[in-house]
Image (cartoon, rainbow, N blue to C red; front, top):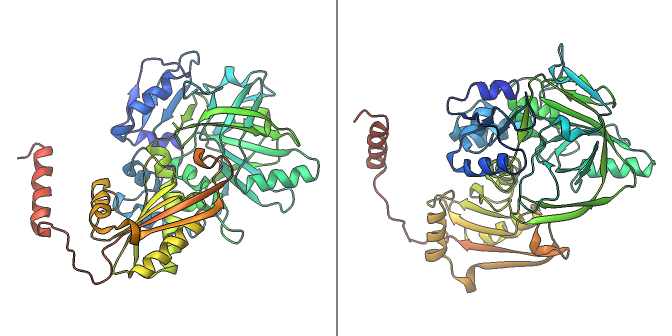
Length: 449
């Protein structure tokens, strides 16, 4: 099973990095999270300069191991567990206690004085919320929805919010059509399984994201009523912002260092906060853009879904990996015994199904698609540019892709397979010998040999 809340997730980590020196939320917290990324370990800042009593947790999904722990499974079962549980829902339950409302601030004059808002990059215009789970209800249908949307602190009790993706972008449009604000609640510091569920793509007939969060965690999400908006909130979140997206208001937002590794600006709606509630000695979450945390979220929420779709459309699709650091704009797909014409069809399908995907490489399943060296080897020895390149033009560009700022984009696919039946066998050692070698090295690492 997964974790009940963020605290129980952190308490079970033997290799949690604990930072006891007080660091500044402006740049210093983000800098340490970035430096620690390669270790694949979560980080807990036990003191935050200027915010006594507050803590910050980050790098919560910096490795597949951490993601597997969030879902209560093993690394080799991570994708299968996600797919199996994501297809069903566990209805939420009404909370008996609401620690997220232990402390209440109604219409706070300065949200920045209450919370350790993090400034991430040197040219960011302001502190940003990067992993707030934004909750709302469609004023037209009454359907509940949630998603992760970046939020720029504008001072006082106002935030800019980038609502570029459904369903919340549609909810706002429906509210504005009625001349009404859109009520929202932003949950900060939830268990990682709930954060993963918040970025899952769902259809109108499937379970809602709260039900998916319960399924991923293996237990119902405990919900309670917000205090100043007509919405349910996760009762065991660390911090809740309640407020309203003002109808018809758009203001400059950014620059902000996005998951593409570049700065991004926009004109965005504005949230006016009506209340801040939190747990005592709360743990504030931090997610550093363009890091392994984002790669893990996208691999589960986007990569697993795309893989499932393609397996149903093309025979021989085995696995898919979103290339780390590319904000899911690049992917590698492994196939088994797939003719070249089917590989070409696969490329066209994948590039049209996922509007983020811009660069796709297809390899045989004798290639480890998670090893950049092996993928590069397949491109060097099995790919011919004139024969094996597919370019698709005239497509919609993705909003945060710097290369398609004009609104239109193009995509490319590479067939780095050897072709069905072709004999270009990859060199290797016998499986038994490789297993024996791994066992010996593991014993050496444990000090047993």
